[in-house]
Image 1: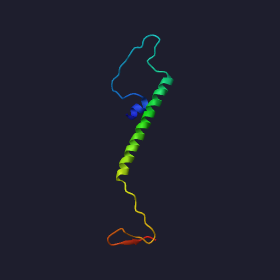
Image 2: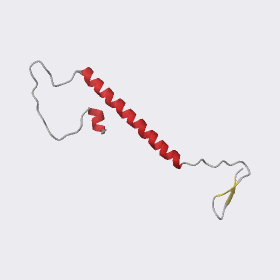
Image 3: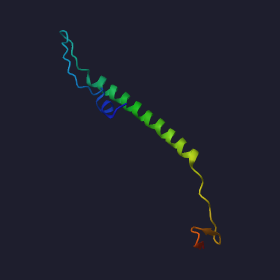
Image 4: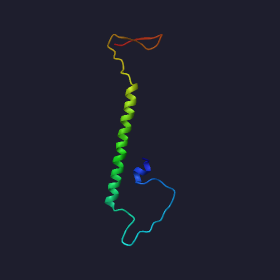
Length: 87
């Protein structure tokens, strides 16, 4: 779904088409129908974002390693020439 579709409810096109509506009909949807349409589009966008977040979380979690825990008095070698004592 493109951001343009999420905001305007239609796909961006470079063509112009003119249609004539019959008598007593309007080519424009009512405000309630339009609001429901945008509500559905935004709900779909939210669901897609949740799915993408879950996918990225799963990918991150497969490569993530827990950080080592250090206690006072443990030695940690940060550099070959330097040893740091954690107090």
